[in-house]
Amino acid sequence: MVDAASGEWELAVRDRLVARDQSALCDLYDQFGSYVFGLAARVIGDRHAAEDVTQEVFLSLWERPGAFDPARGRLRTFLGTLAHRRAVDVVRREEARRRRAARDAATTMPIPDVGELAMAIVTAEQVRAEVNRLPDEQRAAIELAYFGGRTYRQVAKELGIPEGTAKSRMRLGLGRIAQALEAQGVDLAWT
Amino acid sequence: MDVTRSEFQDLVGAYALDALEPDEAAAMDAFIAEHADAAAEAERLRDVAAWLGAAGALHPPIGLRDRLLTAALPVEPLPPADALRRESARFEALLDSLDETDLELPTENGLSVRDLVAHVAIVDEAFVASANDDSVFIDAASVEQMTRARLPEIGDWTFEEVRERARRARAALLAVGERPADTRVGGYSLTSALVIRAFETWTHCHDVALASGKPEVEVQAPVMRTMAELAVQTLPLALAARGYSYPGRTAQVVMTGPGGGDWMIACDATETPGPIPDVVLRVPVVEFCRRFADRLTVDDVPFEADGDADLGRALVDAAPAFAGL
Picture 1 (cartoon, chains in turn cyan, orange):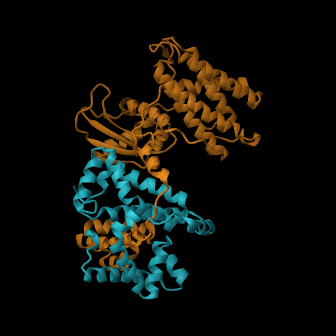
Picture 2 (picture 1 turned 45 degrees about the horizontal axis):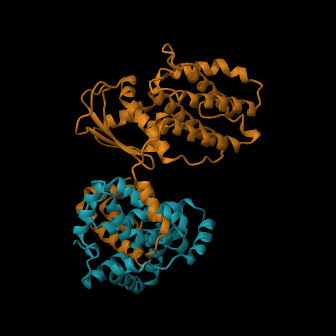
Picture 3 (picture 1 turned 60 degrees about the vertical axis):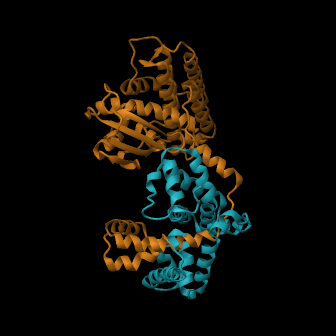
């Protein structure tokens, strides 16, 4: 049996998608549905829009499985990047007022998916711990950009800092997390 | 814009967080495609970003899994009369929502909303009248001609009278649909004639929605699939009609989205498709069908062509070769 968290599983599922095996889409959704939906819901703040993004992300890979190249990275990163980009597109199209109202409503959203969290819990906890260790100004820039769907220019404006500073806080913050985790022996790509 | 090495370093954090402007992101994509070390660094930060989102995993709503699987299922085309009935119902629902002030608004083909409905009735009547008359061939030119000639007949009709005429004509056409399968209508096979009319109804429904700003009911995937089949089958002839010549060439046409599908076609109408395509054309089914109806330009269609890019573009360019009003 192939471990669902392994690169071997990802290769196998990609090949099954290429062969139009619908059970591969089920497996993929069962494995990453909570991650993609949770990410989209947090960025957009509207569960209906998050559902649409989730469906688009999985259909996109179903229709173009060749777009995922196992040699270039992990499936989690691929799906997360796709989901985040689409969610950010949605956010940027929305009016700020509507987004805020929807986000307030989203606080009553469902409980975390224990199965997905169990699989990812160690790494996610380590990442969260490292995020909390970041200097406040780096954490604020990263969270505004990633979960708020802001561009670095908008981040700079909201935080009242030069654009160059916003960019460097994002780069330094992410780099610091990566470095800290690598020092702990966590291979982000292969966890 | 182009990105230098130092600009890459400057932007890579924001890139990993999707926090760049679109032109900057495109420039970074191009830089990364050329530089393996840059790709590795961007991927390293993207991995971190992907894990930022992992702590917030949530149970998706129960119905989402089923919705996804339904959307991914291959959809079979409908019997043509069913497709026509469903498009007729969609068109009727949109017309029901119109206000008096919407009726004189200009639509995509230059006709007012009111005259567009009359145009649908006039062409339906011509199809009905041509049933089993082998001397008639209804093409784009004759559609335009009959519309111009007969529109004055309804000059002072109320919109309800125009709609009633359209309903009667459509009912008569559906009755023709009950005839034996070898019945010729407007110079076409019976099944093609019914799908052509469903396609035109779908197109004009969208024309009216755009002109009036009123929402249209979402088209059903099996109807989309039925129309996509017609569009694909027509492509080899459309290529020839537009002056393209691709003997011995095969294209795989992959239409994405609900009602899409996957077809192998010979690019010369006299041939059969080979086993290996010269081009794989990927295009959203709705946009391709809008192009087929001549409602989008080639540049407005978000297609991708893997392989022979010229052939891929020719297929999209030629698609509306037989589109009428």
